Amino acid sequence: MPTVLAPQAIRDAIAQIRALTSKPFAMNLWVSTEDEGARTSDERAFNRSLASLAAHLAELGTARPEYQPFVPTRFEDQARVLLDADVPTFSFIFGIPPREMLDECRRKQIVTIGTATSPEEAAALDEAGVDAIVASGFEAGGHRGSFLRSAEDSLMGTMSLVPRVVDAVGVPVIAAGGIGDARGVAAALALGAEGVQLGTAFLGCEESGAGRLHREALLGPNAADTGLTRGFTGRLARESGTA
Image (cartoon, rainbow, N blue to C red; front, side):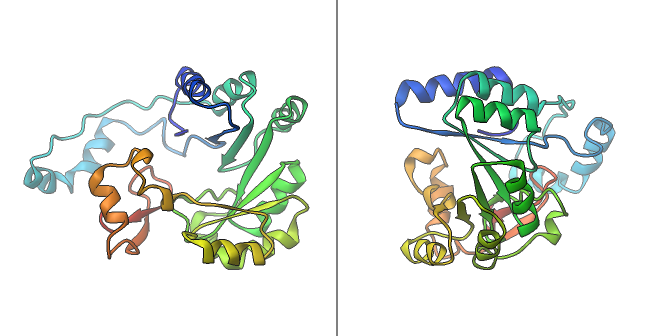
């Protein structure tokens, strides 16, 4: 689920999922939910950031975004909902939950899956006692979940990262990033991964909730035109060139 969801919204989402299926499911949270300067940024800073976009917004006939004060979301409050609901699997990025939280997951038999963008992060997650580790390569869509070094310094490709993580940890490794067909799955498994995580490959499905134009772009001839940006949330993330 998106990191911005309030605890009650997460509680509601879990109830909706359980109403639709009895199968296991996972909930994903950001361990680190707040960046430096989030509490001090004000409306003047917001207006300055929009100044360079004013002409583009006018050309498109798009309404100017309105300033919304920062409302902090505590990871601990979000995670408490997952623990109280005994979700089958708790996955996370941007860090490692407190040890007492991971201990509670073990007592409740909640599977924990951490995300690593480097062998060093994988080793830290393994030492913390997670059940599995996602090795998220440079090619992955969405945010770069780095937490030991900057995202720019943690851009190892998936097929290079996976075997190094496999060699560094003692738990199952799940490969992620740039894998979209059976060849990629076979390659990841050959490198030692015990599972593969696909995301963008499923955004083309109607059930994903992506808009029609977005789905068409993902299936079009320029789908590989992507890049890294901080333009969405301030954290490094991969975007489509058609975004």
